[in-house]
Length: 476
Image (cartoon, rainbow, N blue to C red; front, side, top):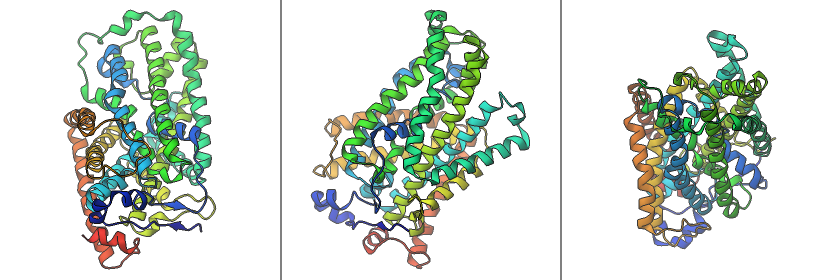
């Protein structure tokens, strides 16, 4: 089995005294023996699938608030959220070039408890999000095969698709990365064609509609749809240790991915809202396929439904990779037992992380699509507050730490940059339902309990954890 080299780390107290040493000693948490494989193009498409995977899933924004507000949301939200998140990810992923990403950032900023909390919240958000993709895939397929709409055929289809896709992830990031390139091209092709065919049918005044009269705005659905479709740019940070020349590849990859993602959402949304008039309630998940039939015929509807399946595969693979390598990074930090960092003998993939993520995602796949994305969003929101705080704290306490890419703002400007997305996070929390609060609350309590359970296991030597210096940080 390929060995994993755990780099020597400094205690937090020492780190604060010697920022230069921090930049050399702390960032590299994982260094696989095999060479890094992820280059720029596969990285761009992996980021794209971490976040979007195409315009599938944007339709409920129109259902919730009408065409105008949906268009404004997808135009404005990237500046409020996506760009700041990508900038933070670019700076910290190039400063801490190892697996674990945001878990490493929180652990270095605030210590192992908050590092563990960050890891648990983001991991749970990730695996809940993973559960949504087989559900999304089946929601499109049921338009072709109605029997998949409910009952045991639906449940069996979700189970089989989840297991098969997990096995594909087991074969390695090289295959997953280039598969993402092919899946991205294939899933976007019908939308490019639909948008071109729709041009003569577009009536620009339809873009100004605030929705049908008498239809109440569903702000919870609106904000959660925007958030779910345009976040998770930071997920790719968890596999920074697998990227070739991350100091150059990460900033460029994130820049291209942000632009690519926004264009992929906006062009079809402008095309369909401008060319199709239907009851607002019909803008549910999967409506783009129906619109394609209205614009060009059933053949394009089927193509988009096939594209949705391909997109769901790409989304699943990208996010499962992130959660699996996150667990490996947490094991390297001493936040989880060493066996979570085990890699496959054949493919050099973190098979324990893949298996754990798959099993948990299966356990929540029975939830409705709306409950899935709302629960994932709230957990992700709690983790993002900690991530923004970690970014600011590391910049303040370790200003001289080597950062191959640095956000070109001083600390006051960074505070403003982080305040705007923080305000939106509060909005997401305000509009959450009681059920979502209950699910997220229980999982947060579970995350706290998990930290103390791991601390107990370490003290009793029940499992093997990482080296002595990690243990010193953990026990402080």
